[in-house]
Length: 426
Image (cartoon, rainbow, N blue to C red; front, top):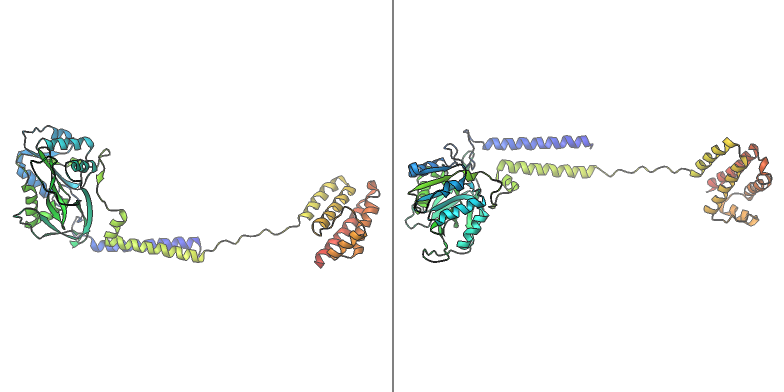
């Protein structure tokens, strides 16, 4: 298969994968003009927006409701210990800089309340809270349906379940977060070395805790989905939110922070066990089957390529008689000067070199024994070998100045006859 054919095959496979993905996505596409995904904005249209929750808080605070859209430190820094104020953040991640974390801790130490409802919180903040209580970290699990409870004795949300729905309202898995702890800790208001108390759980795991910081409190809740429009549409969801906020003051000013939902380059690192791109793909049915189809196509491509494509067989260069070429080159040079004797000497030198290298015969002294040995090893008659040496000693070396072209040609023919007989009998 040619390279062009492989390219066409890969394009066809990818086209099939794209069609399968689009078909599966279209089957799951919602009927309305919005998708059921985690948005965490303040709108009223999307099911997982926070518009209803914001309206409840605004209605409770009245004119004392303050929206933070910039400069968080300036907004909370103006409140004094005599004021009654609650800071509220609800969103996916809480992006806070180091100075903003310090401002919130000072805000809580003065006697105010800080409510953080998010899937991811700054690592610096959690480390600071670990100084006041037993260290906790945020962990995750995946479930389509979760059981929600609070530790309130007269709770109205016992055995309350929340189902995460998406697209055509089908229940699918999503990620949930909780505060990982080794053991439950008791809480004593008057004791030094304050601890936190457990206030709520999800699937038996702690997702809502209350930390004592100075004269105030910091509340951490790791399930913002439970405060969205869809969660508040029924009585059990509304009662759950009511129980979460029932233990707070919520009688004075409410500072509602939307500024910290936006990413900041100098924000502290978020502690959250987030999805990897592959885990997100495998959670979506359409993307999952498209991914599997793509992997299968790539595997088939390499299997067929390895089977059909072989290593190129190198073309070996044909052996050439370099000695003959060398002689031809020298002959051309000597012919220009008409130095027949020098050409004959060169020809004889090559012949003697042949006897030494190919037949392993010493040529320091040429005698009848040497000629006989050459004949035995080359299988050429002694007479033909003797004729070469006789002509060389009697004609070529006898009178170096009188070597003519006819003598050179005769000498060349005798040596050439030897080579022909040697190659023929070999």
